[in-house]
Image (tube, rainbow, N blue to C red; front, side, top):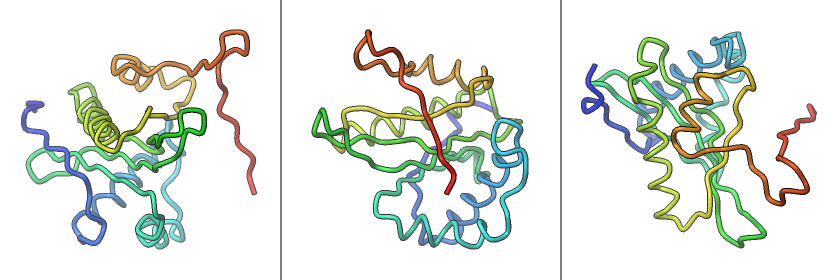
Length: 163
């Protein structure tokens, strides 16, 4: 595969082909040990596209090699209060295992960064599994690092509370 053959598009979730690609790629990611280690539950599959379409800040990118969807980024617009500017949070970024290491993830990250600059965003954010060394290398090569706002406060930790 030649990286020049990869096309990244901002998804139009009203298009059935983009809906199908989003579901398929997210399910593939969910099954990965660095995702959720299990397929998307049927209920989540049913609610995903309507939920993404109904959420006012959703931004989705798809990477295609020829006509085959090979990568996905699901993002949400947020707001950085201290900068008083928007930011983009990359909630999911996935590349099919057989296409990893070929620059697809970097192409997705570049498309997101371009979108962020166009929208006047101050930064991109994401979370990554601590032991997902391959993804961490991609993110670090693209300029991501653990957030540190004040050195004496230490690095930022992502925390979660199930409801």
